[in-house]
Image 1 (tube, rainbow, N blue to C red):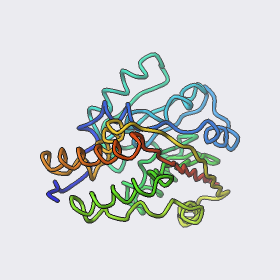
Image 2 (cartoon, one colour):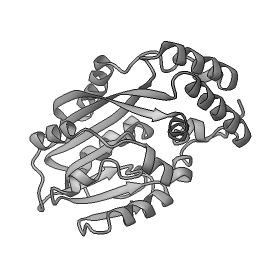
Image 3 (cartoon, rainbow, N blue to C red):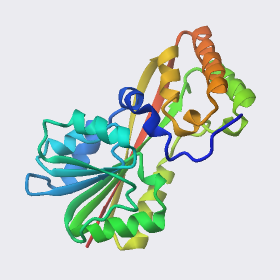
Length: 262
């Protein structure tokens, strides 16, 4: 399938759709963060890769001062408007790797479904240096698994991927596991963090055929498909869903890793 190379730019081209169709995160996840570290008006946090701000509001509501760093200019504009009523919010446009932050200055650095874009040997040492003693790094992400409850639809979608996007065929057959979440949690130990914890959260989302294709249109590798090919590809996905009941369930696994600077 024709594909435009280089994916860093892709999300910013669909900022409004990303904001609408990408999910927020479970309340239980934030409860675990807040039990791990107390946040109030005296605290400062950095959100790495804010995107459409799906993970931002619960942190802002603690009164904590949040500085978001976001590579996409359109996302930055969107979030400035979205959180304009919060004087404790600001956003810096740029790559996390390139933006300068003061050392030993932050109570929390967190990243939601974004930290995997940053090289491990750059991201973890930088977060460690930014945090105060006792400061916390929270890394979390959503891992969707579509239509595991509808094998005929799953198989049909796999056939369509095999035709249009063979590199993606079979990629969603294995659900994200606790073992994988634990492996990510252990990474922090290599960079001096302690008190490592992780947890898993689960939910189900239901989409109409057109909604699901709009969701697919917010994924970087799908955005990068050549436009005419992507249009045909999505049309076949939509027809398949409509031929198999008209809706598609996505089973989400959300993992959270917590680590503390000693």
